[in-house]
Length: 119
Image 1 (cartoon, rainbow, N blue to C red):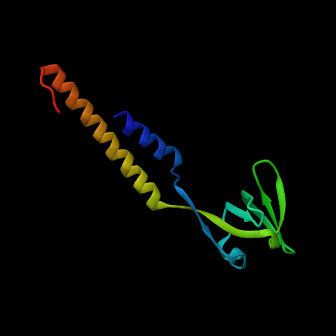
Image 2 (image 1 turned 90 degrees about the horizontal axis):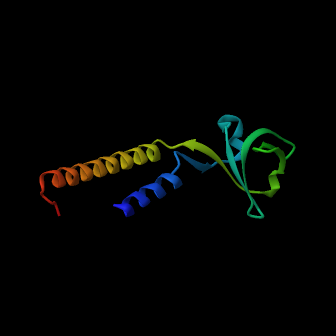
Image 3 (image 1 turned 120 degrees about the vertical axis):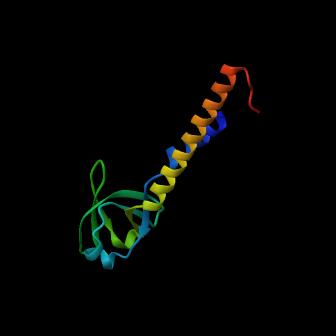
């Protein structure tokens, strides 16, 4: 039972309802993503919101400050999207797990109360 609870805790901690999908900067005016993840050529990853693109440079607002990133330094740029599939799968797994735990506790509780043990 403890192993199941630990497994579910790990699933909850590392699961997200959002996913990142690569897009081309040429399509930026049509897409206009709210949040992006930029992987630079030196393997640094920066998350933030694009404020403006001009003269081969991106102005990105991060949590702490605004950064200027040259387009030539970018390896990949990904937009953040809400994933309905991940959200529904996570909700289903949590619901089924909670149902299993509650039924397991009820059966053990009823068995102990009437003097019958279940395997």
